[in-house]
Amino acid sequence: MIGLRGTGKSTVGAVLAQRLQWEFLDTDTIVEERAGMTIREIFAQGGEPYFRELETQTVQDCCTHDKAVIATGGGAILNPDNVAVLRKDGFVVHLTADPSELWHRISRDCKTAERRPKLVSDAGSGIDELKQLMRSRSAAYASARHVEVSVEGRSPDEVAEAVMLLMKAHGVNVAQGS
Image (cartoon, rainbow, N blue to C red; front, side):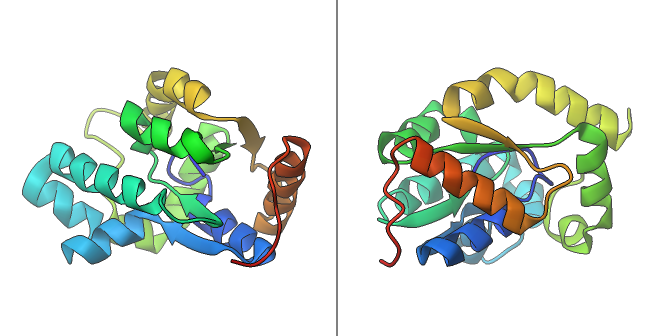
């Protein structure tokens, strides 16, 4: 699962993994566990380059698991090494939504404010920043994904069902169990 913050990668990924009876791996959670601090604290102490280094190692490790659904951080696709390993043996699903929908979701999520770096800079609104991120990352997302799935107006179960159908349509073995 790839996509901007707020698209539901972790939520949909967990639902999909449960349906498939596969392992669920959330790279942001694993980075936090390994570092012993939140992503916000990692950014504050070591900056984005340090976080991206931890993230890359985590993505590489997660991709060694068979029959796993991996929810990546929104910027994981900025590193071509991450994209290569995700695509090597995986089926990469890009979850999308309109920036206003993403801002609405992010604003309602208390955990985001506690664990993630601030999205809004002093210079603009959250929606403007999401639009800018969307523009700046669109090519990276496009080259990383196998398919794109909009999450707007859909429950996590509905998105997981759509992903399963796309996996089957693309010849991905969705055999249950590990």
